[in-house]
Each structure stands twice: as C-alpha cells, then as structure tokens.
Image (cartoon, rainbow, N blue to C red; front, side):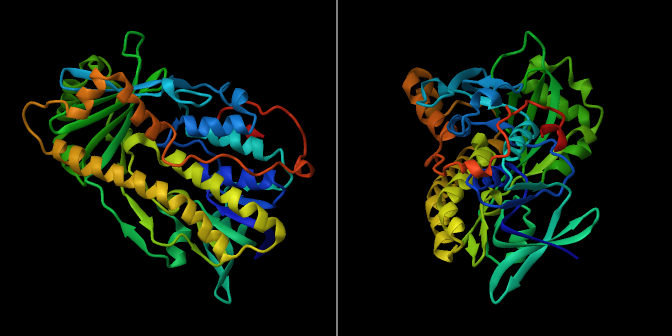
Length: 426
C-alpha cells in the first residue's frame, strides 16, 4: 500500500473541505485534500453563495475574479401565499461588499477555490481518492485509508479533518454520537427553462399542501418542490400529469414547458435530514460542515455555514499546526466557536419546519399569509432581519490566517475556467 505523509488530511472536496485546505496551505501548512469523484461536475443543491462567503472572497483579494464567473444576483427574496406576494428578505442594506446572493453552480465555486489552492506548493488536492477508514494508534487518529484507481493508499497526518458531508464515512468510522433532530419533508429537485418574460426574482410559493421554490438561474429555473417526508413513492405512483397539474396551479406561467421533463428520471429526490454531533472531535480528528451538523435546506445556509466552520478551524488551528502540536483542546475550541451559530440556526430551521412547513403540507383550503410576512410587507425595515440571518449568519467568520509568501508557487491570475474538471481549473 502506498503511504503519504502530510500535516493535515482533509477528507471531502466540498466547499468546507476545499476552503479549509486552501486557508491552511496559504498559511504554509502541508495539506492533502481527498475528493472521491474525478471532477466537481455534479448537480448540487447548494448553489447559493451568500454575502458572508462573498465577503471571504474579498478578504482573500479575489472577489473580482470570482464574480467574473457566470452567476445571477439575488438582492431580494419574495414569498407568495396564494395571490398575496411580498418581499421577505432584502439584502441591499447589508454592510458587506456584496449585498446579494450569488446563484452559481457549485462546481464553478469549487474549481475556483481549487485553482486558488494550487498557487501554493503546500496544497495537494487528490481527485478520485475515496477515504475508506481511519488509522488509529494509541487511541489517537493518525491518518486515513483511501481507495484510488491505482490502488489503496494510506495518508498519515498530524490531523484529519472530516468534511465529507452528511453521509460522512469518517463520521461513521469515528464512533461519535449523532443526534437526529428530524425533518418533516423531502425535496424534489429539477430544472425548467427560464423565458425572457418570466419573473426576475427567486420566489417561494406557499399553497395549502404545497411549497415550491423557484431559483432564478439565468437560462433555467431550479425548482425545489417540497413534499412530506417519504412521500415520493406515492407521488410517483400517481403519475406525472397530477404532479404537473399541482405545479402549474401554483406557478401558472410554467405551463408551456413542463414537457421538458421527460420522466421521473429528470427529478431528483433530496432526502432532508437535520442532525448534529454532540462532540465534533477526537484526538487527531475534527469534523466540520455537514459531517458535524447536517442542516435543513431552509434558508439555503448549509454551504455557507460549512464554509464558516472551515474558516474558524483554520483561524484556530494554523498556529498549533505550525508549532507541530495540535491538542484536543484546540479541536474543542473549534467546536466551542462554531456550535453556538449551528444550534441557533438549526433551532430557527426546526421552528419553521414544525410551525410552518409541516402544518402547510397537511393543510387544505384557503391559505392566509402569516403575520410576520404581512408585517414585512408593510414595514420594509423588517425585511433586513431575515436578510441578515440568511446572508451573514449568527456569527460570521473572517480570515485571520496570514499568507506565508514562501508557500507561493506563482502569482498568476486565477482563471474562470468552466467545465467541472479539476485540471480545467489549474
């Protein structure tokens, strides 16, 4: 078995993993990031880049290059309850560099960060390398085993950071306890064409028994159709005609394009789960992002919260890693820093799930807009609070790790390469 030695092994090439790897490598720390797929070109749910993440791009000095990538700006979010429509979140008053959500394919975001990382000799992103388990010695995690097309490999490291998502292999291997918080819903995820005379903003449609979210992606609508938990088989058994009839009752302007969905193969089921670890760490091991706390899709904050974890972990751990002595107290400090915003955000998500989504999915008859929506419609200043919670979060992080000039391998401008391949972003 091939053996590799590094200071930090990050498992998972998603937003949290690649960002954490970049920040540590930028600080001169040797990092190996493992991504099990050959490229980033996949249909993700988390394609919303919030103002908090755009602020990090500014702090890294690459915001202009980043926004050169194709994206759509969402400065406001609307909600429609029957015939009543109101703006419920207005990002234009945030005290950030960018006062909008950038709708951008996650593969473009990941390729961009990976390209940035390759400017540092200490950054090693290994595609088609799937972590399979932990290496432990004397009660401490000392690395991971992984599978590659060329054979198995072990990566020995001073620290393993698990950022491999809500179905984390490393979390399963760690033995850490997961608290399931529950979710009353799943999401059907599909695309429909966007036409010039369509509405120009991301909109949440609430009807008795239904919630539909239309995300404006320029030339297409990304549709999130919320259904009761475990209800997809029943919907599919009824056939596509009743399904489309319900969709068109909610958003009639889509009537001339549902034929674009040939069959159920064009509809992806996203199973919603909300959970968190009671303890995010063991000696030699730290979990961040969805591996530590799977978020509800409400607010679309999961990706951005995971990136905040990555930044906080880099801020706290760069010094101990540079000194060659990461204690479990340092890992505990990451959880202490990030657990509060996670708990508060999940609490708000659970309240919306239990008091809005669940009753709505079971409701029949006419639907009235809730009082907070009516108040936000009448008092525009009230739209700033949800914008702050969604766009910036409970405890935003800022980059405190200094760049190590010796780690640089060049100063080339980061390209805006597209196509999803790892090599395309280099």
